[in-house]
Image (cartoon, rainbow, N blue to C red; front, top):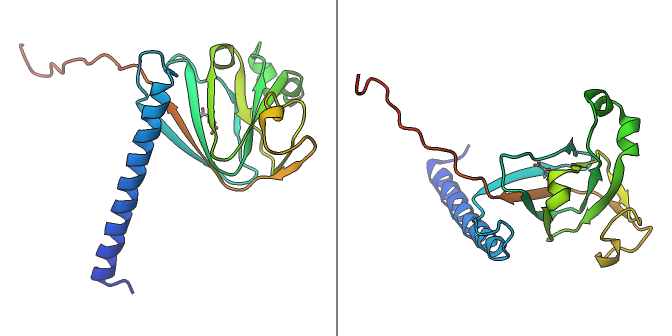
Length: 182
Ligand SMILES: O=C(O)CCC(=O)C(=O)O
């Protein structure tokens, strides 16, 4: 059984780790802002996703809620981000064969790398991650020449954490008028 003292030590260690992580994360956000990724705006939003081997994310666009740049810090395993031409109808979305026909290429996401997606790749094309446990480095990968693994190499996925850092424009603040000025 955990004693009260052990519990307090555990909580303190957790707090220190969280504090160190939030400091580190703020530094990364500041660096990404300094790159001009969001024009004259600052990074103000982080989404943390964990992917176990075989897990992915359906092809999608991120939409108009965000400044049209996605920046992602890749931690842990590699992964592959696939790009697709937009859907013409809901029917096409349900048809996997059409999905593979709309595939235009991919990016190999290496561990400890930063990905920045802007312009057409943000506004027009869909992006997603296939639910597979292995990837083969191929010429379909736009960045294969820049990556460490060589063409034909088979990479086995492990756990990956992605930190997606964005700028979310501030929503209008409306004053609550409940019961006032009546
Ligand atoms: O985890 C990733 O790299 C992609 C995440 C993503 O596409 C999203 O959260 O909209």
